[in-house]
Amino acid sequence: MATTKTLDDLFLDTLKDIYYAEKQILKALPKMARAAQSEEGRAGFLQHRDETQGQIDRLEQVFEIIGKPARGKTCEAIQGIIAEGEEIMEEFKGSPALDAGLISSAQAVEHYEIARYGTLIAWASQLGLKNAIPLLQTSLKEEEATDQKLTQLAKASANPKGTKAA
Ligand SMILES: [Fe+2]
Ligand SMILES: [Fe+2]
Image 1 (tube, rainbow, N blue to C red):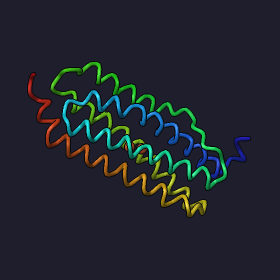
Image 2: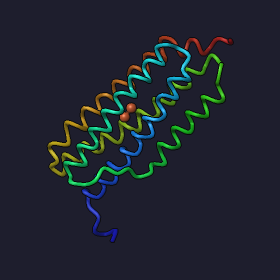
Image 3: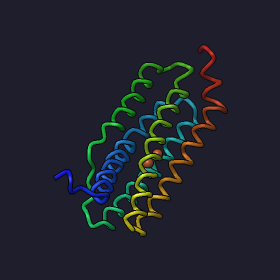
Image 4: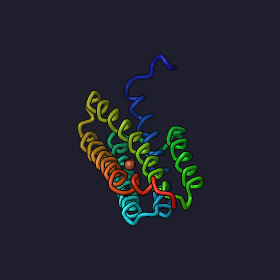
C-alpha cells in the first residue's frame, strides 16, 4: 500500500532510475562522439563514456550494499532528453551550430544526473547508508566536472563557431 512506503522505497526507486539512465547514456555517448565535429568534443564524449561505465559499476555496488538485485526502471525523463539530442543531431547535421547543440544536450543529461546523485546522497545519509555515500559522491563529482568541461568547450569553440554560416 502506498501509505506504507518510506524513504527506503524512494531510495531504491531512484537508484533504479539512475541505473537505467546511466545505461541509456552509455549507449548515447558513442553516437554523440560520432556526430561531434570537433576533435575535442569527440574525445570528451568518449572519455565520459568510459567514466559512465565506472558509474554503472558503482551503482551495482550500491545495490549490493542495500541487498537488492541491480535492476533498472524505465526513466522517461532521460529518454526524452536523449531523444531531443538525437533530434539536434538530425536537424543540425553538417551545420556550424551542431556542436553547440550537442553540448547543450549533453549538459541537459549531466544536470539530470547531478540532480539524481544529489538526492541519492542526501537520502543515503538520512538512511545511514554510510558505504554508499562515497560511491555516489565520486560519480556526482565526475558529472559536475563533465558539466564544467562542456561549458568551457562551448564558450571556447562550439558557440563562436556556431555563429558563422558554413
Ligand atoms: Fe553518469
Ligand atoms: Fe554524465
